[in-house]
Image 1 (cartoon, rainbow, N blue to C red):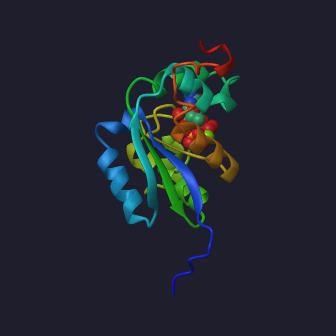
Image 2: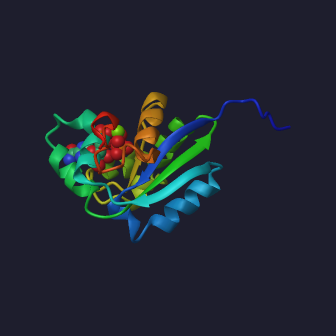
Length: 157
Ligand code: RTP
Ligand code: MG
């Protein structure tokens, strides 16, 4: 029996630039096979400014500039995944940040199989529900990704 009223959870998944050429199809297949509903999908190249905003929580970390550089080096695939418990399930599918740790603890995870190192680790996933809502709004609202400044109506001629 289908419960149409159960509020499904959303999370943001990103296929990072290092995985786009060789592993994208594998990752998408895995997502489809795990019962996630892909409710939004787009391929895009992040600007430096967007990558900095996207990972702003890590601004003070020693790896921040490398991370930003990496995230804008080529196209990313942005996906909104919908499922009960989506945030936690997608994080579990990704595995730990560091692929060495991933290989040791969850060898079937995406990072264990596809990541090359702790920075180039093939996928991103929101770490909690609030993050998910914020990042989905950021990536999928046309306003936030608009590079042109909006014209202020008061100064319009
Ligand atoms: P993500 O946010 O991308 O899903 O990854 P995560 O939660 O597993 O890890 P987080 O601590 O949020 O780090 C974000 C991304 O920064 C890069 N990183 N590099 N060189 C390093 O020590 C280092 N540590 C983290 C990775 O790309 C990581 O996914
Ligand atoms: Mg994170």
